[in-house]
Length: 180
Image (cartoon, rainbow, N blue to C red; front, top):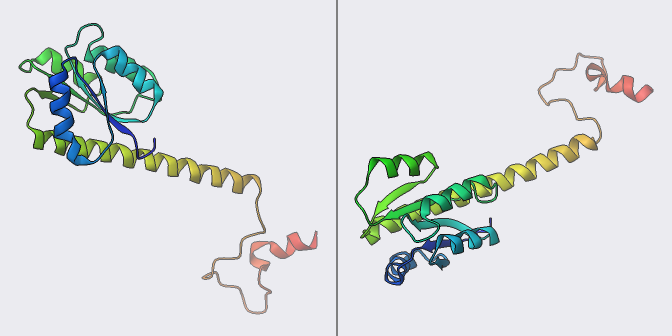
């Protein structure tokens, strides 16, 4: 996922979308918006979403259904999700959300400063995770390439002691390989 990944804000109320965009604008990340769960899923499948800020209660496909769908697909499985609810927290909603791997459940109206702090942390942590995954893939490819096409034999470790009078490489078997 490139670092230009958007923060996708999903809510069925235009006023809430506007308020959330204004709260997150100081972060300097690209922001996207969707007004339904179905629209959010389409944007997620198109890619370039680095974090999802999602209303739980929407007509049609609600927030929990969106998260269930996301978690089934490899490409969207690890995108961090913050759920928004206009209702007081209830244990069932919290249990269902956290069981799906939601990063947090926030009650509206939100504190813009607290929301920015959470979103910045989650977004940056996700981007670092993706960067590490890319680095691991690159290192594995280099390792596979190296083991598929081994180069010349390695030199002995600089601290390896060679007995006096014995040519260098004799203790590693290099001389035997060279004779064959």
